[in-house]
Length: 202
Ligand code: GTP
Ligand code: MG
Image 1 (cartoon, helix red, strand yellow):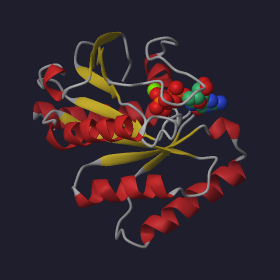
Image 2 (tube, protein in one colour; image 1 turned 180 degrees about the vertical axis):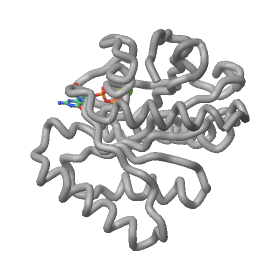
Image 3 (cartoon, rainbow, N blue to C red; image 1 turned 90 degrees about the horizontal axis):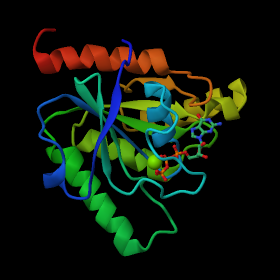
Image 4 (tube, rainbow, N blue to C red; image 1 turned 30 degrees about the vertical axis):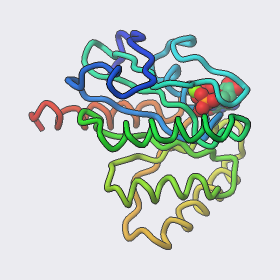
């Protein structure tokens, strides 16, 4: 699939102010600073579509971007941003959970995990929360350009090994890099295939 057009639509701090759920959408979720907004820019080929920052806590609302007039990419606030006040963090987490559990047009969530790090509890908890709530997701291992292939592979394997303790069958994982464009084809292909289901013409 080729992204011909990517347009910012809205920034919502309540579920009711999100666009009508009449198009398939795909959300990006993960720890603050893991690279959600950068990945959206990489996929759309627009450097400044989603705001990015080297400081965590940049994205603070549910951001909808309309792609080719046909589907939405959704940028979410980062979870676990340690420097945000606890009350603010809880508020975002509640908003995100409500969004994930109730958004009828949400086809899939990309769960981002930093490939430079050994397995982090917060990431494992998030994956298990998706499992518990039976929500579909795809793991994206980010910033692969910042780590050697061997180190990245060993981190990813360790992450999967942790999940294997509770998961019978592991969900798919894709390595990504916002810098080199790694993972782009696979992600767009997956979105294309999944959107067929929304239209009912699979
Ligand atoms: P919040 O909105 O705060 O939750 O963060 P985010 O997950 O949207 O992260 P963001 O895209 O703002 O990126 C955080 C930092 O990581 C920025 O300095 C990016 O330039 C950098 N970054 C993100 N992805 C990559 C990548 O694939 N490779 C490299 N080298 N840097 C990356
Ligand atoms: Mg962001």
